[in-house]
Image (tube, rainbow, N blue to C red; front, side, top):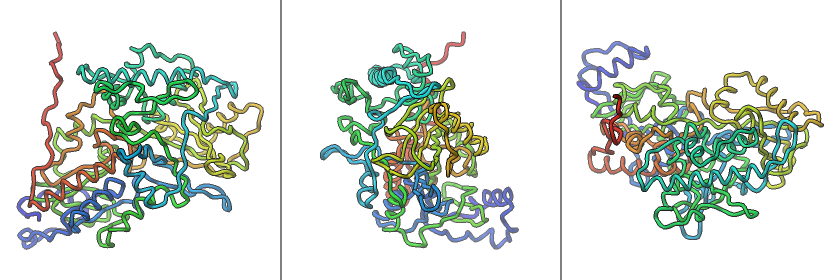
Length: 533
């Protein structure tokens, strides 16, 4: 419980700044208000819900999940799309269960939830079902595409060789260049984009060479590089094997990618799971957090409607982007080591632009890659009007990432639609492209509840930064999410594992009457000083 001698100045400051409070009388200064619960779980995405479930399983019921939106799910977000009479549920956020299980090996917990709650899924084949285009229309450059796949395989394999030797990290772009992979033509650039940007939501220039290739650390432990690739048509393809996700030999799950096609939405696996243990008084929807007042004695959380919630602990599961944009205020400000960690990692953006047409006129493969003269200009196309997905839906979508995502978010939707249709016209020069019946994309970066799609590890982000990003502040303020996961950052199962792990740590604190929590490093240093002479 907060004591007035410690917490009141911070509370008064918060109320003064945001104009929420009334004058405090002397009697109020003496008496501390009662706490509302033991733990406030801030955010109702995967990390928040799984942390709540973990507390519940540990016999702790005094918690409240505080969610800004009208439903649980976080970045698992669906949208009803299409004309009346021909509407479908599309996933504007997380869309795939990535990795399932190999034999009796490690099991992806998101896959386990999906099976438990009967989610409708179908295998998605990223590499085996592709048509290629450029500004002349359909143009076969699959040979260039296959070379790009090989370059990616070499990139992640060679990074694995650097880890045991303790060599300095570089950007993935540096790694590509050292291996002789220097794309120049628009076809080479588009092929590299498909292998890299479309996976990470960021460019090779923005991404750590080592962290993009964690799994290949195991090459130095006796595994062959070929344990981390798959063969198709005589060509070696990477298994997108970063983050210990796709390779059972590295402690991952499997090579499967399962596309959610459930009419109720991917998010329902989390919502139904929450329904199995959450009581109504343990959930606050439509409650946006504005300020978190924290001390060694507890926390107070100011909501946008002026209400103050009080607890012994707060678990922040906000996205990295929200923390970077100061969309939530902390009083006192977070310590320097925490702020440095937050701003040392990057947030990728992955934007799917959906269109519904009167009838299908496009490729019969699952995927298409378009090579534009501008890198990242509407390059990766996917058909939902496919025999394995939503046949007859008339739905086609194109994905953009990173800076281009942020660019289109600054434009009116009609402007973006005109650009997309012009690219389609280029891809199909002999056809008249009809006006879409429906058009939609989610503005992830500009949304103050998200500020991006998922985290990305840059070359300047060190292991100590990662530890500090995960570490708690003043014993009472905790953090969890996909960004705090060393092995699975950027994935739903990363958020799951972090929610579970931090939930267990909090349970130990509560049962033990307090704890120090996770270690942090005050000053992160290079292995050697810079020579400035």
